[in-house]
Every structure is written in C-alpha cells, then in structure tokens.
Image 1: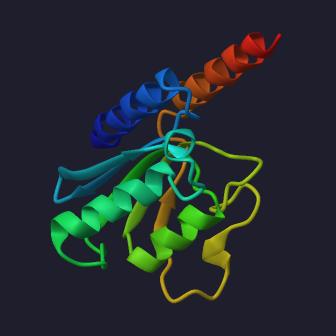
Image 2 (image 1 turned 90 degrees about the vertical axis):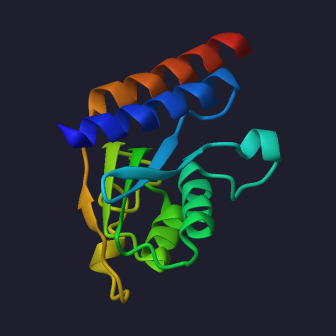
Amino acid sequence: MTENKFMQTALDLARQSALEGEVPVGAVIVKDGEIVSTGRNRREYGKNALYHAEIEAIDSACKKLGGWRLWQCEMYVTLEPCPMCAGAIINSRIKTVYYGASDNKAGSFGSVVNFNDLPYNHKPQIVGGIMADEAQAVLTAFFKELRNKKK
C-alpha cells in the first residue's frame, strides 16, 4: 500500500524527533508519487511554537515547488494536525491529508473539531488511521520515557 510507504517515512522522522527530545511527529509531502519535502517537530530545538512538522514540510514544499499552492500534493503526518497546522494545510491547498494517530487534545480534522465542517474556501480530503497503531506507539513510548525521566 503506497500510503504505508510514505507514512513509514513520516514515522522515521517522528522517531528522529523523539531521539532529540521533541514530541515525535513527522510529516511528508508527496507530489505525483514522489516525496518533495519532509518535516518534523523542532519546537524545543528552535524555541519556537511554529516549528511543527507540518509547517516545516509545507514551507519546504513551497520553496521547492516555487509557489504557495500545493493543490497537487498530499501530506502524510503521524499525528492528526492541530488547529495551526490544519489552517496551514487549508491555506496551502493541500489536496489530501493522511494521518496516523488521532489527537484527542488538539486534533482539528475530526477529534476535537473538524475544520472541514467550517466554511473555509478549501477542504482537503482527510484519511485518518494510516498505520495508527505504530504512530500511537511512538507517541506513547516517548511520553512514557519523559515521565520516567521526571521521576
């Protein structure tokens, strides 16, 4: 399954973030079956609330493709996007978002709120649950280790 191949890359990026003490989220943007950009969480490293995996991947894709409209692109992300990232996805016109684990605290494509239910001018197709168990396991292991370090 093609979705699994790209989600596996996003999971590898998430694991890399975890090794660096970042919340493990990875994102991949694909156009015509090829990866055009990647991103991962770097908020702690950059000391910046904007440094989410999706934002980094969108920024890189826009630069590589030479424009802000990513209407021919798909995003694969390990965690359901938050409100900030959902807004960036809508504004960049990404065609489809595939995500792994749902986010019951900040998920904005169905878990807490569904941005596609709001009257925005673009509504990406959303496919959740791609390799969800693996994505959730990466997050669970990270937060378990973090709690153990605090003890």
